Amino acid sequence: MGRIRAFPSFLALVNARHRSPVNAIVLATVLTIAVTLGLGLYYGPTTAFSMVGTGLVIALVAIYIVMNLSCIGFFVRSSDHSFSPVSHLLIPVLGILAFIPAWCSGAGIKIPGASFITPLTPPLSYMGPAVAVWMVIGVGYLVYLYRRDPQRVVQVGSIYLDGD
Image (tube, rainbow, N blue to C red; front, side, top):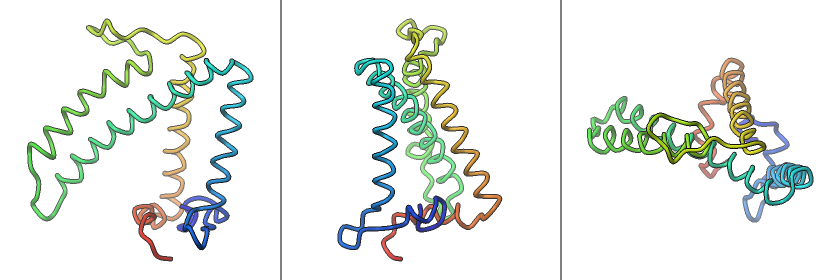
């Protein structure tokens, strides 16, 4: 995303031989070590591992739900008339319905009729608000990019295409 200037340009450096984003990998590694060591030193390794796992579950299950929604939107708007009510509506809706209790369980959010969900105790309960803040920052950055230069947001879809 550095190559399309959605992230700072220093993240655009790609290794000539392996085509891997060198600076982005270094930055991600440093941030990962900082978070895991910070939590591990403060809460202990077991609790830190549980906190990171809880945060990842909350974020990834939310991503699965949004992906199911986007599948519906994509195929409903598709111009090639390939929309299949079963594949492109029913299956994603069933996926959303299946993932809602999973997301609530991972976040420790009690829902009526779901006795298997127990509220999370601190410090695990801190992960829901932490992930929410991270997502709000991400959406805020997306809105900022879109208002400043809409073409960069459109180009995000091409970041996996090989070619400079």
